[in-house]
Length: 304
Image (tube, rainbow, N blue to C red):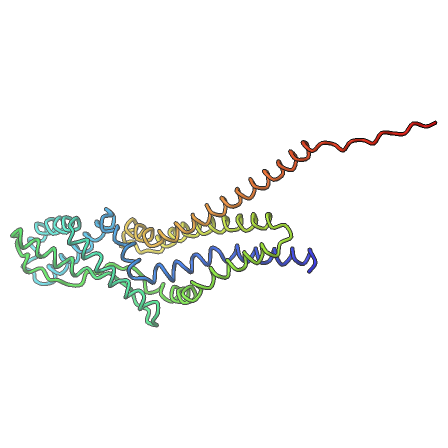
């Protein structure tokens, strides 16, 4: 194979490897991160201590309780202004307990199953977190504190939307592709990179090209995550807490964001190491050329 053909094939393979690196990372995150219940629950667990999430849960549950109290009878309405502050304070207090964290984990476990079923199914309906267990705990807490009408508070489904119905069609198609590509795209990127370096006429330059391309892919993935966050929050309705939704988005994409920064750091590190190795090699060559003694000159014969 001619050097020109080898160089051309190497350039194509390296370009494909660099292009597939961020997409492979995204696909692997979707397949092995989002689709795993244990990893999902672990990622969402810290949100039980997030102030914005706790406030959103308290407002949703408290408002749901008071709506049901109003709906159940007109005799409750005159004292609504008296009971409502106590209800909201009780809910906020409950969100700081270990029982809430347990309920949060169980609710997210159930939500994860619901989201997966929605993405793998065909029905377009909103996916929510059921907060009925939280309502039951608040009702019990109010009853223990001898609050009026605590036993009359109905335990209804108070839900927080986590996935809009209109987004399901687009997400379902993307999830199906990513689920299949989660394994093969990273493998293909590695194979193309190795093959491109092996075919290269100048392998050190090929290694540098792969490293820089990987770093660029990681940087683009970081930007895509940030842009996705902005677009996601912009599409939310006004009644949904944007700070809480942002905290959920950050928790879900934490692993992907870390992987993107690792790609960037790894690519820059390898490129810098290759550059340093090239400079050191050039310096050794210059030093060797300087220290090599010149060959002795042959004595010239005198003419007679």
